[in-house]
Image: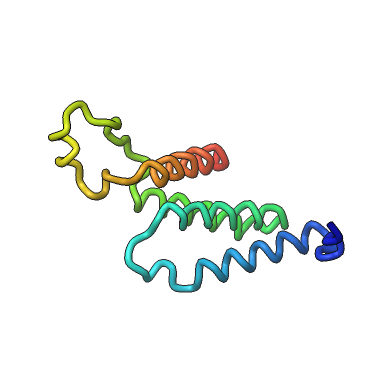
Length: 119
């Protein structure tokens, strides 16, 4: 395709991905209203990019940040099974428990990926 010359090394591609990731997240992401599972996933991506460059201190900080975001959101807790046994129980769920299936699945996968990475 003729695009082999864009990145001279794999490090150049990882540096570009890291800068795009940091710019997309922004500097005040902790100040905005509520954290999302995508903030935890972004921290995990920054963790992998830091470990690719052998920047272990930054990787350790991103790992801790990812765990903290997951704990703040509550993805370490067990959720009620879907669909509930009766429709009345669905109305009794709090807004914290009433997440869509995609966010819930992404949160579970990020949690277990980070858990295995820490081990």
